[in-house]
Image (cartoon, rainbow, N blue to C red):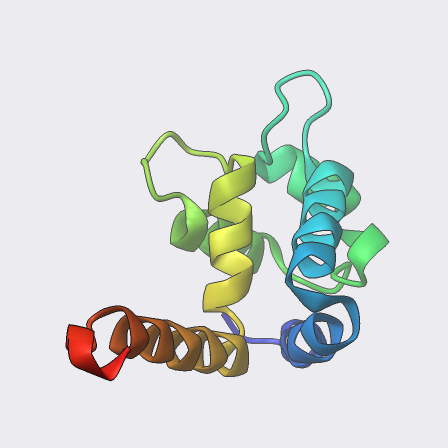
Length: 119
């Protein structure tokens, strides 16, 4: 997805993660989801995304960019984003956060699978 507004948002996630910590970041992502969701269906639809995107500074995105965002995040193919799909999409759109998450996972796995004598 192209657009400077998206790039600005991507750059904010690592800063938010450092400032708020993991739990705080998840809370903020959930708040973002609630801002964008269709209040009756409790999912993000194209219509709710288009209507509410200005709340997150995404008002300059074209319809095709909004649809692309929905398609990219729609993991189960139902045409909208639930809260988990939204959070996964936000992490996928932030390469720096994904890299940090992969590094932490690798460290945890190395620690978990060390030979017993090394623990």
